[in-house]
Length: 387
Image (cartoon, rainbow, N blue to C red; front, side, top):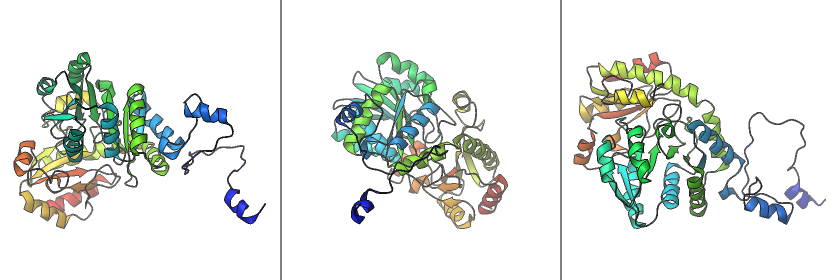
């Protein structure tokens, strides 16, 4: 065989009577077929197989199947980011003239996307207080296609009463979409409480190591088939290596969230009574306004996120940033390392001061994403930073 032919064609197949314990990365953008009959069979979905990278690889299937089983969903679609998943959701589920009712404290970029791109596509969005079930149901009209809420709101960790919403929406044929990124299926599984579609930023707790970006939508197979077509056409597909990393992270999701949640509760209990803290926000605290609902929806761990209002306002936040040695400022969450962020100047910076006040986001509010460090080290760092 000629040198150039050998270089192009050799070294692709390896014989082995055993198989790897960890699935390989299918780092390819296209698949080879041996005959036309197989081409037709795979392309039409009659035979399992893969065609082209944008359509998905074995890594995508493993990720989608795994998280779907964790959530109790029929199927899932992996996308390049959480916003990629939102894009596939909008393009695959909605049509011009449809109406959407959304939580007013929905993730800022999602809210902007619905208000701008959604509106240009002819989808009208009404934003309401997601903690008020009655107002949500009142906002629905004959044109309403779905209600969109978060499992735990960012950054105040408020909850929507999913069973009550489901009971009011299902008879009217309205979908209940829940972004569960702040919780993860280790904390709250919305489908068990009546949700029909669930979204995740895989970037956060499911991958959990700060080394990939991805998104996922889950629900009934008929809806996921529509979203998959939208994802393929829009090109919001996830790469195979990122899919592999997400599966790697999901393997330890349960043990990570159990430890992270326990530490988060410990920190919340400590900070709630600290003289520098005006208020602590954590659903595991009896002082949380929806603690009873939280215990009903999350009978186990209650999540690794907590927020606190520093009594000294913006100056106290600047002092915290200057004095922390272990906690690092990072505008994301869900990592194995504990990080914190300042919503007024990151996720909610585009809101007016009046809107921030209406949502309860004051100048001293900071959000902590608790990692896997020793709780004693975190307590020591916080105490010296807040002195």
